[in-house]
Length: 71
Image 1: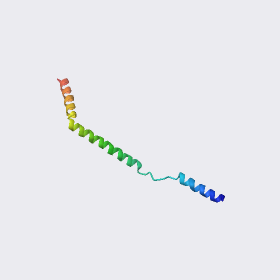
Image 2: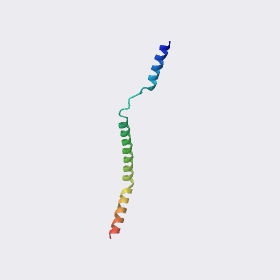
Image 3: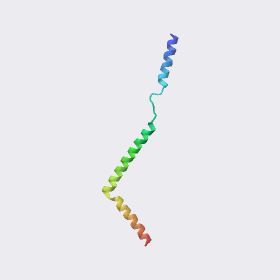
Image 4: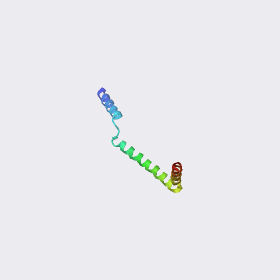
């Protein structure tokens, strides 16, 4: 009976402490998800900037300020 208990206890300890799944490639998957998120945000910003023309106005103001200081 003691041998059965030791065997069962050892087996259950092994099941509890063994690695449950392989994590190779996890960092690559996380990196790919971060890149997809950054690309989505960049696309939203580009769509907003082209729709509102605020970037063009900003660049015109900056160039105007630079040319005013040169004169």
